[in-house]
Length: 102
Image: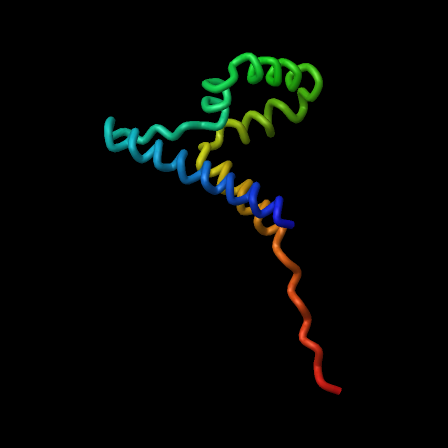
């Protein structure tokens, strides 16, 4: 459970950093230009992005084009925030039931 919370917290930190980057870019240019997840991935590891893209297009063509490309084109801050929230919700402690007095 703690690992899921740590991963969720890290994703939320990444989301905040990406949102800050987008806000600073807006401040400089006065134009909204949100960094997409595929742009971020390509800027850090272009060979990994290209090999994953080729594998997805050949192995999973039905899933790649409509679904995965849509997810990758989402803004980085939004994708990271959703993943972080899902990790936090999935790793929360179960509620204790109150026992009723007999």
